[in-house]
Image (tube, rainbow, N blue to C red; front, side, top):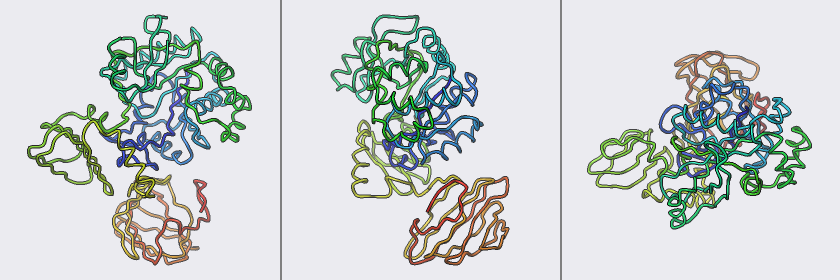
Length: 463
């Protein structure tokens, strides 16, 4: 069996926690494990890391690589969509990759899952996946997983169950779009409808046959082979697998997952039920409350105090604060759209920016200066670069740094400093086994991030 994890989405429904440069799948909200890491970890013991394929894009490649290294899955495969084209092209790309690069058999199960869901307990979920695999390989069906609805949810698509095919699988009678409240209530009351989880299992032979029959434009591109498919990926239509294949295929089955907790973390309201209640509120961070109840408070950066408020969602970050009523967090997308229209940088990135080599956090800035805290991971290095409009002063807080300054090399350690004049080639490296943390003070008339000339970069970045 091959596992395909879709991790290319740039959703901002959890703004301000989630930004376009660092979306939901990479967030570590309730603990020190991201949603992507939890997703990959669910399949440990079922497959080897080399049988996992993570589909992302070029902007997120190093985020995925870093997070997989953190949990010991360095041998998993990461493939990048040249352009976002929705789930059908992404799954087609992964299917061809599994065949050509991993030697997947035509009758071998490929299990596809989103990267940003919560599913517990893992053992019961794995038991469902095993049944899905058996049905997929044994019957030639495309099998999806249906979640037993616990309420008339309007934010999910639904699957209508038909005739029973096995002990846990049913023929898919129909896929239903996100309903209004009244229709959702009818779905739940009937007992025949399940939430659409977005997980699919199929064999390469079956998927390619369905693409040939129902999405010939996608199939014709996959027939060119993996390398050519990557080259010509911009020709792919923008379409989901539901629309391209699932709603048209006659061999769709749904495996019911009744005794497993599932949450797609699609909004702050969905997060509410994942956070334990403490003194009448659900808190991630530090809260001091007086006569405040039934609130979700998320804010690790500073103390939050509330007085006399209830039924609120508060999400605090260093550069943006969200306050909304419970039950209305789906409207966060309206805020994001307004920020995009105003070209606000907050919608794109946080004050902490993640790079292939580590991360940087802007601590302070003003006219002619900016102060950053920079952390370089062990063995990593920044590009050999130069700035025309600013000088920089570095002080080491932790670790050992190696500085290339024109044709000189300098080693500097904790409490030691160095100065980089304007228009001087320089590179920072971490030759040690511990993270290197420095404070960088930039001075100059122009401090834009585009004032950088790269001469050499191990990550292939330009400009």
